[in-house]
Length: 110
Image 1 (cartoon, rainbow, N blue to C red):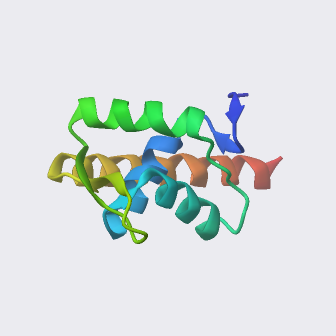
Image 2 (image 1 turned 30 degrees about the horizontal axis):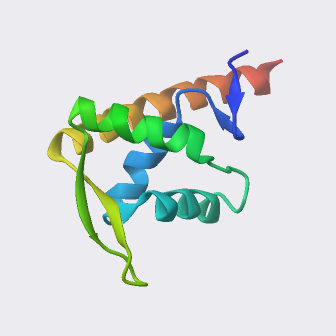
């Protein structure tokens, strides 16, 4: 089966980042916290995975960076979802639903 990193199925981190940013622009630490919070602690995203993902998503044109002050007045890089990112998220979410439904059917049949 596929490799696992930080509790996430390989290949899902980008989709979870895009989904998190669909809610509102956030900085890296906030994104990691939100993923952990919404997953009820099932998924833990470590910085060693998160920041390379941000660079990958920026290069693809799916997220846009913006430097601005945080809640405690420190400067941080915030990310927002681009229009291309919204299209990619929609595509990935549809594919994930299709695949997870197929896996469920197989598990129920066996």
